[in-house]
Image (cartoon, rainbow, N blue to C red; front, side, top):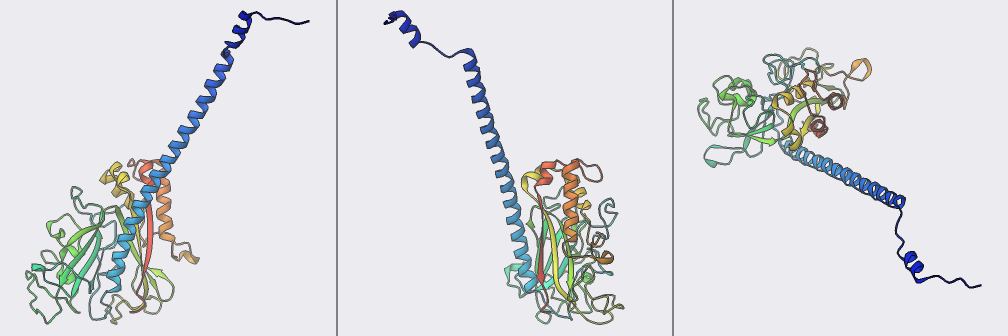
Length: 352
């Protein structure tokens, strides 16, 4: 028996559409696919932003350390010239023990300073070429309105050898390199021409045209010594072998002969993160990063080991990211703190 269909029934079968349930399922599938794609793009953008932040910080740290490497490599390694380096006495550039929960006190600096003579070119009056320079590094901690505030600065002040110009007139722009017993800080007192090399305050004398910003994202600078006996310390000589030593020249003129290398640690924030943090908050964050003198060593008997300081700084950043504030309660956007990176490099001085 042959069943015949009417033309009308054939047309109805050909025109049959989707049911409401099918449409709903289709819309749901498309929505899920769009959501997954948008999440993928969002994650990719976040990863890209983080990568760019790290690239910016990595590049800046590399520039800073390469410049330091040149300066240290050509440092005058002699026992008859002075070094303005951290030590137990006659030194103002030490952080003086500030640390997490123990903010900077009046007269203290958050970061270290260093000044020494090096046979690298420096700024010199009238554009003349200088055979030796007074090199100095510091984090500008003077006036918060200064564009260089909380940025790493480098000084390269061109000098002459003693004998080329023997004038010691402090107003003389051709002041020569000095030999002991004269010291760098000795001709850097208030009103004298090297004041800014060893001082970092809110006075006009602390602003020197020979300083230039070398690390605009570097807001924390700390250094310490790796001695030839393997110990890390903030005293530039071997206290075990020289328990009576008080300075680099007293009682013996040892210079930096006990030092194997200088370790430099810096904290770098990317430009986008810096724009989110106020200068006060950034200063609080830098103050939370304890200095070498007070961080807790993890070695036997609390001895300080390579990497301990940097590990302490990393813990500070993890706390800020978790809590969204510094130890003093200053609000710090977690995303800005995530963009901060810590770097360390050791500069070999064993050829002294």
